[in-house]
Image (cartoon, rainbow, N blue to C red; front, side, top):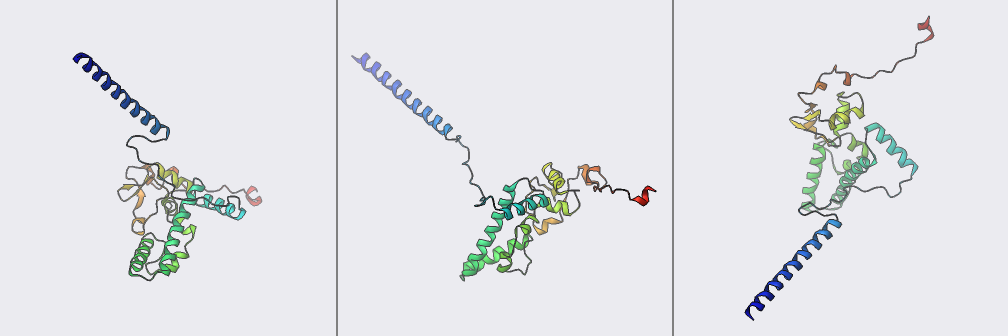
Length: 220
């Protein structure tokens, strides 16, 4: 009788253990199907919003110009910059209508931030924030500044230099073309010390000149 009791207890323990293992296996499969991994961070939400009317002719033409002029990879980069611009504008509008001490602190913080990023002058005000355009944001991207400093012969090449780790800000390598450069860091933009591209006579940095067709007088 005693042996039968021990045997039954062991069988019950085994059954309980098997049930727990099955539950764990079921949970692992469910998490896997939902796209999660144990210990993995949650999927981040998009930090930008797309346009509501994607087939507006004027907007399409404007975006085509921006893509070409600033060497952007795709329209997503435009949407991200627009979201940044909208965030500044929304914050400025809220601060205009609010007269509290907290709003005043936030106003000063916003103006200092935008001044440091080169979007407005040090004496700028909230109205200047509302006057900002998408071009003002794009002009402060690292890719744009590398090109404007004549460190690349084209806006597309500027992007390539950044992605391939040839560009530094001080001692920090930046590989993100869309990095918004603070005013105090602008003079720190340079080629990495061991890069052959630091030589202005390097073939990759030579300015392309268009071949002019010979005139009739030159043919004679």
